[in-house]
Image (tube, rainbow, N blue to C red; front, top):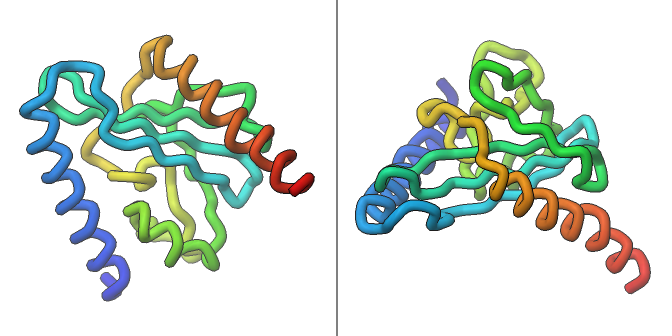
Length: 149
């Protein structure tokens, strides 16, 4: 295991422990984190970490390049998602881990945000609605505004 991978694992473990402490004091449905990412394949991801039964859980949504056409990714259905090697240091700041056992240095949907555990769960309709709004605003409208700017 490389030093970078060890550092990422330590960040992931510390972050998950902190979310666990926070979640233990909150009622359901509080949002602990929302992470928005663009993949190497020009798709978009939203990772929601929320409180359920006083524990943190994660939902992952994947959309097209403009953040539309969302699909939920759950652990048993998460295919690898490739993020370019040049983005590894930036992604480390949001705590995904480098995948192991591959030669491309990519990041998988399972490792984005917190990896396994927790398993990525089927999101409720409210998270899908929120994700649709957040992702299209960020990746579609946001890019149009940036180009006009």
